[in-house]
Length: 382
Ligand code: MN
Image (cartoon, rainbow, N blue to C red; front, side, top):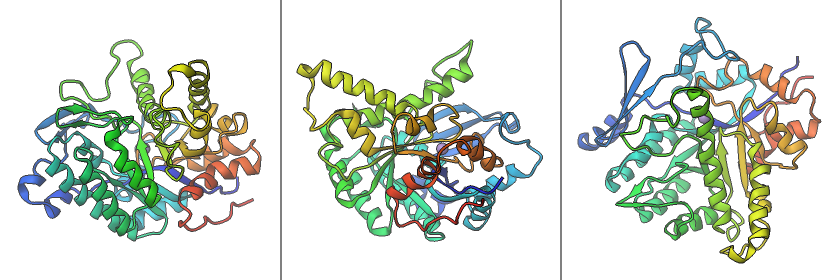
């Protein structure tokens, strides 16, 4: 099997333990996200700005498609999350070239309720992410944008663009802004959409990033029978909602340079949701507001990109059968549920029976269209 190269629309950096301590005044650093694992490693508690979240840790070695715990991958992924030189070596081994990266612990900062802390914390995270991005032209790091105060959001997006960021990340549902629970259709966000469009910064959502209330167990919607499968499946829907909101509200229609990425949620849903949006637009046209300049499904096909890891049925078919050109591979490195350790096997299983054009578009082309400054990957091996 010759080596196939792929860009990744879904990867992560892992913050150093002292990131906030070294970059923020102590009183602010103390309130930034901090993870404490139980002694047996089965659970972790994440502390954020006076809130506490408990979640079960993934169990190494239990992913059937993945890896066993004793092959050294566990340690390598811990190192590669933080060190770019080790990371690039892992990526070269795996055949992953460019990467769109999200923070790990930083994702929890969307739970912050204090605008001052949200801004200072985002700036610290972004300064560190830029140091990582500067270490390799293959990394496209997303800037964390504080969303409580819209002026802060706009200013931080501008600052990050000037620093060299090409993408921002937002949670799939905004947290509280004061006492207000916003939704991405709200005019509140228009100044941010305007500036991202003007600066051609990609608007990226990673699934499972909805802020949680401390009294709900993180990521748990279903209990009892089927819970593990249902809860994992549930995480994908938030990305679909965010994308649908950006389309239906007209936010994308009037800003044709604004491109949305939904990471880790698969891409087979796009043709399906696009059909539903179109049906609503046509069959309920009297109630549709705002009127869009074209079918919402067309807007979604043009301006929404979506990444998947192992979707053997749906995500390749989204392109080959559904005509959706923005389906993108994502490795989810260095996370447990990603393809690290078996990326080549996965790529061959996904693409060996697919036309070279479709294969290349999903592995390389869609990512390149979003981030044309990233160098070309090496040629595939025959
Ligand atoms: Mn991911």
